[in-house]
Length: 252
Image 1 (cartoon, one colour):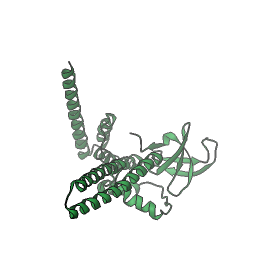
Image 2 (cartoon, rainbow, N blue to C red):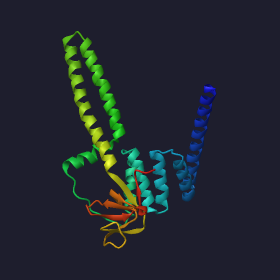
Image 3 (cartoon, rainbow, N blue to C red):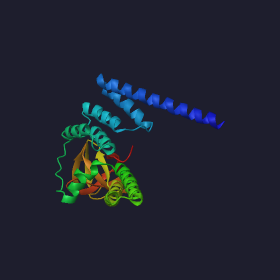
Image 4 (tube, one colour):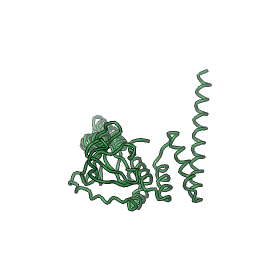
């Protein structure tokens, strides 16, 4: 009975994978034929089945871009970069999409450490940094074992030095992994989907309007009260916006 259940699970998984592949091919064909709305519908059907990838988000962003839908195109390019921060095609298309956005917000100048983090450390996700940690742990352990059993002094010195360097790098990358993970959980970002929205100084409709945002602007979410979210934009300004007018990048 267990073997039968296991076999049925394998068949179901294989059938589902084939179905998703077929949908992806179909969506790509719709895109090539200029049927962007049809392509979007199929791409989103794939996402609804919890099958996500950087390529899927990238293609979906391209389809929305072709329809001049700024918010969704930027949203899905950003989603693609979350999964593959080094994808240059996504970065290039994101630049073009941002040019369609109306808001031109000048970011606060970054410190040297912030530039280092953005330009180098964030090129890998915290999951990829975790893989580096595991590999360094293996190398460090292997080198220490070779040092322990080696009899030739020259080799013992080489293995010991390599083991210590690997262990030092292990500590550094473990710290980086933890920081990247913590930052990803605290730094909740979203894209404005409303064509135009007013940001207020309090989470009520009768509060003062302090600035206006347009579709496609990226914001950082600081707090949530009922159907309002407190946000911060690149220049440091903060305020409250209706939750339904932004879409969280951490969501599906």
